[in-house]
Amino acid sequence: MDYLQEDVDTMQNELQLWRSESRQHAQALRREQSITDGAVEPLRAELAELEQLIRDQQDRICAVKATILKNEEKIQKMVYGLNLSSRR
Image 1: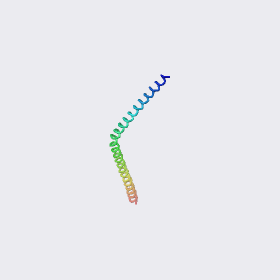
Image 2: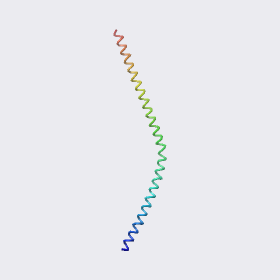
Image 3: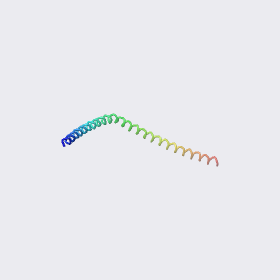
Image 4: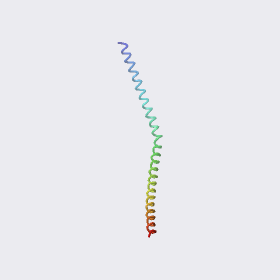
C-alpha cells in the first residue's frame, strides 16, 4: 500500500511537469506565431496589391479585345459594302 501512494505521488508530479512543459510550449508557439504573422502581413498586403493589378490588367485586356471585335465588325461591314458597290 505504501508503494501505491508513492506511485500516485510520482505520477502526480510527472503530470504537473508535463502540464508545465505544455504551457511553456504553447506560450512559445504563440510567440513564434506572432512573429510569423508580423513578417507575413506585409507580404499579404503586397499580394493583395498584385492581385488587384492583375485584375486591372485583365480588365484592360478585355476592353481592348472588345474594341478589336467591334473594329473587325466595322471592317467586315465596310468590305461587304465595297463588294456590293463594286458589283453594281
